[in-house]
Length: 99
View 1: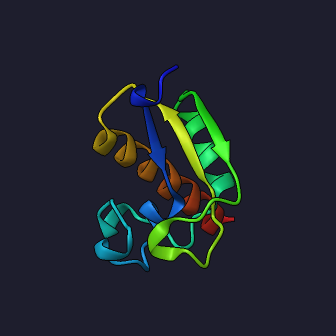
View 2: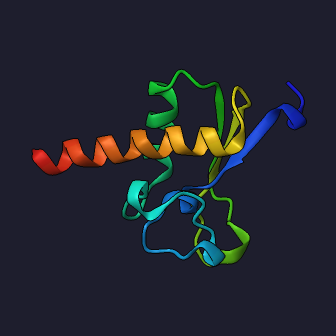
């Protein structure tokens, strides 16, 4: 797989507490609180996406946090993939709040 056929996805793309300028890429309505790389991996697995996990990497706008990221094989556009992942993360967050 070539890198041009891949998407880089950081957990901060889904963090409701971040502004767009600090790295959030999805609307606040489908963003979640403090997403973790493990949560993102689970969401990608539920969506049957092929991915590789890169731990201890730092997103440049938040260089002080080693959050890691996913390299996901591109099936859809980046925006569509991010929305699908965000909805999965939101659904999981809703399930854990009910418990």
